[in-house]
Length: 130
Image (cartoon, rainbow, N blue to C red; front, side):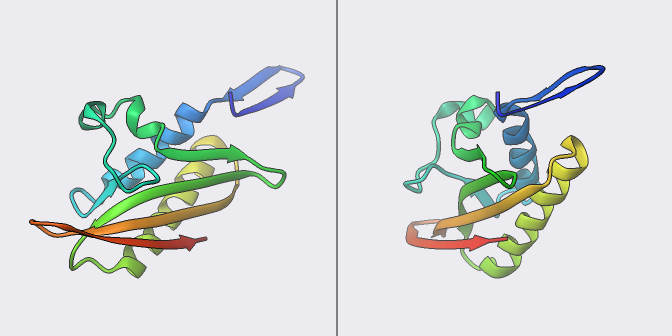
């Protein structure tokens, strides 16, 4: 469990899987242009194709003093603007989490681990934080 709020009516709990699912769905809007990887820039195992827990484990989610801290590692297709995609993705993740859970993310970071072309991947390590 990531977050728990006790109210007079009862307890409200939000798990990491809920936040992870929101992040994955936000990244999927970019279809094949952006793919989630692990911190080494490698695609998670077989389960990733079916949207399972393997992708969620690649998203770093922590509850800090000021709110949620989220870090997502991605690779981007060659020819896609890193700045436009990362800024748009940060805004999308931030807005969706706030809309669906009511929690205000403190920080959302996108770490670009590489650029992919049809034949190869050129490694990068660019972190964009919002």
